[in-house]
Image (cartoon, rainbow, N blue to C red):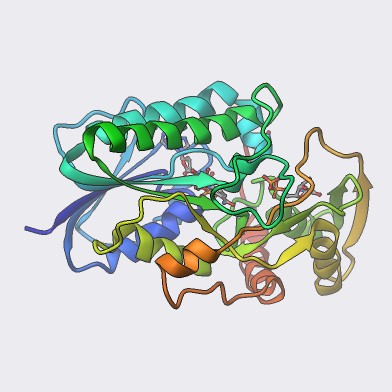
Length: 322
Ligand code: NAD
Ligand code: UDP
């Protein structure tokens, strides 16, 4: 008998890339994807024609089935600040109640993998951030629904591991970008590319000196593929996964302006509690996944993503963005 795998949020940006990788597994004979199309889109999975894939349109926190799974990958949650800030309660439910329901769907001895975030470090006071850094998060601030529900879900899974021995894998992802991000997603790279191709005005918030570590999706999913489904990894996480080249937002915007004729910067006021910096300490990641490196620099990654966005924007993407 092959394995049964459940993915929540599989119609989203990262989720659909994970599904592509799962489909290549020969030890899996059933893959159930649960997504409510809040921020994901059906077309992200339309290219897959595999009888093992079953799609269920549902909220992960209330999804019901008699089936039990060997592996669950819990990705359901918006990752974009304007989307999660617009519906904070729904964000908390997706992460935390979604995780509880995912755990219920495991066979005894099954594994749950969870996409946490560099947001657990808040506006960090040390750089780079190792997993042992406890972070600087405002639990009543504008980003708290996302940050704190990720932190609480990490807590939930670690406590379940301690009390029941459940097998967990937790990653903290740092600013992932690439093809299949919604053009109206609202995060920096996707916003800048959509804006460059439409209005021409790239909205840089607060001067753009704040920095992030930008990970191209193929690199990140290479790491997730190894960490989430190799049986011989004992480390439960949390594991930083990202590209440790830290680049100011303004440099990303200026690079896109160079690439797209007519594009220009539009300097805008800062957004509240925008973290000033973010860079992963990848020591543990390199130990856990020997040989893995983020290979795609932002220049190459943005050129590849621009090509995808150009096709998408030309086709006219629909929007229900905040
Ligand atoms: P995304 O918004 O593209 O994908 C999220 C998917 O979850 C969407 O398809 C959405 O419809 C679905 N979803 C949301 N709530 C749901 C619910 N209650 N029930 C069922 N489906 C639901 O985001 P992404 O960038 O692909 O992020 C995937 C995961 O990785 C998220 O958990 C996110 O927090 C985490 N993460 C992403 C990044 C990043 O930079 N992209 C960074 C850190 C963490
Ligand atoms: N940002 C920006 N213009 C935009 C979107 C984002 O200047 O149109 C900035 C944002 O203020 C932040 C950085 O880019 O400093 C990364 O934002 P994103 O939403 O991509 O990710 P996060 O803030 O969650 O790291």
